[in-house]
Image (tube, rainbow, N blue to C red; front, side):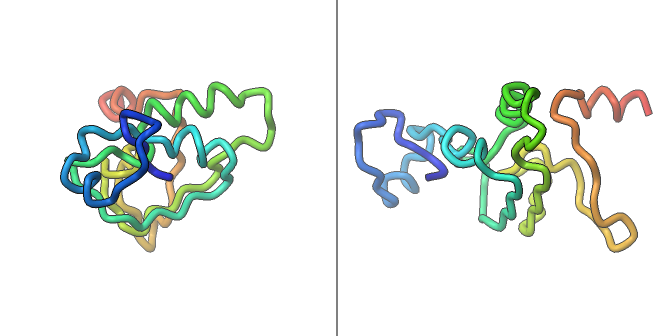
Length: 116
């Protein structure tokens, strides 16, 4: 699941989630992302809802897996292309001329952008 209620024993209710998204905590980074090599995202997202994967969550995933050469999330494709949206670390849209970019979760992209 992408989100879990703040009270984990409560059953998931989509109507409740849509009406009260602030009561939910993201769970994707703990339940799915540690086991995935590729993420293809295409979900609708707006600021009322928890992100699918934040910069901090990706950093924690990467740091916890440094000893594993088969690290998760080698490729992230965001078909919805919501810059800084549900996949928070999506820094920019790609183009035909530049169809991909690298993202290092240990680096601070804001600092790199300011320096360069």
